[in-house]
Image 1 (spheres, rainbow over the protein chains, first blue to last red):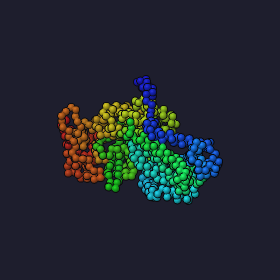
Image 2 (tube, rainbow over the protein chains, first blue to last red):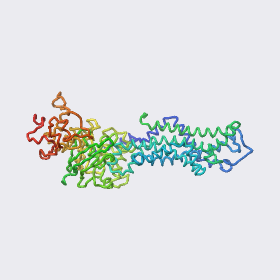
Image 3 (tube, each protein chain N blue to C red):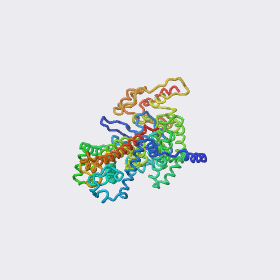
Length: 299
Length: 332
């Protein structure tokens, strides 16, 4: 009997390659063309963001003025033309990638941590915690995001860090709501009860059994929130309360170029396209993830 | 006294909701002997699961409140334990098998990890060693070791219930609570799982409280039977006593509503009426409104358990009259 089960076990090992939910999701994600295009684009952007410092010298090529080459149309030498101060728009867009990504990812990361903690406490304990967290959320929700961000940036001073903080607040509210809803459905599951019956302490149950099961909607929200936060950051920069000039942030560049939009439209068009493509790529990824994580669409 | 691993005395558990007080358990007394298996039988809503959760002191609170009574496990009162003692007791001394194997496993962890988790927690050994132990446990319940790396969705229902059993037995508890362990399985698998449980319990010298509404399961597995109705024990005794010399009208009703293979074509006799609403329990004997033998006295006072045989107890006023016999016994 024991010999038989041994034979079965080795056979099984070769036959079943245990496929985790993550692997399963990845496999399904790769089937989605839009998501693959989005992911490839995001990887390219990431490489650009990381290599900006090796490609260009910040002082001379990115913010250094060269009036003799001002407002040149796109050409082989300047792919995206030059701006009113003679700076190459292409290199500024490449260099600016990092700001958009840092602000987008950073604000979502901070918002995610805050939202995850407050949301899971509210969902798990309910009662007073729930009231406290959700009413605070309602208050923040009732103020337009951009208005709130403008006020916070004004108070903290214009910098990348204060932008991250300002945008993370609005992300935190949506993450808290999603986490709370997910935790409330998971905490009633039998395996949570069974974890209690095993003698696991509450914090371990939340960390190991509840949160991992809530991740699907949160992962989707992360990709979508990065996109919307990049737009929000650019809007703030456009309004002049974001990243200060001469930093090559895409929104700042848009704002700089808008007075020349009739005569030298490339100053606006290319940063605009950069923002659009980035957000589009993130949304494609988010939609793909949503489909891949939805058990009802399993094929 | 010391021969019993579990002693529940006069347990009262109520759920206090906004709509009113749900009286789930009303003075329940039962005991499980060492290395014995007690079957707890009753209709849906009789309070079986609440009893099980009370033993682990896991009654969801709020709204659940344990109003009174004591639950002694190996001589220690569960209701007086601190959180630390409770966490130590759960899984280590007492383990529970849940009803639905489809939802009792965490979908994002491999089954090996889930078995190892409990071992790691109670025996303070590193994950790697615990995982090896988990593989052994899987082998013990008849699943190939290599499948420890698989996720619950890759197992069938019967296999999952085996995994759940492996988790429960991982820390060698001496008392097992099985809450309808085979209800969600089809009959062929039921027999396999029951055999497996019986085997493991005998091998490891464990005691078990088996909660079920399937009298066939009880006959196969249990030494003793307790019949529960509306939060009280109405009849308790050895399986032989309860099955062959049934005393309580409710137990008789349960047997009458079972199909009988020997007398095919005979009509089933369901018990009249419904379980009483636990928010508005009737005065006196809670079974009286549905009882064919009920008399005036039944609606006055709650019957106490009385001895009718060696270890056979029944809570019924009808036995005030010494000549009283159930129809079932009168005919056969």
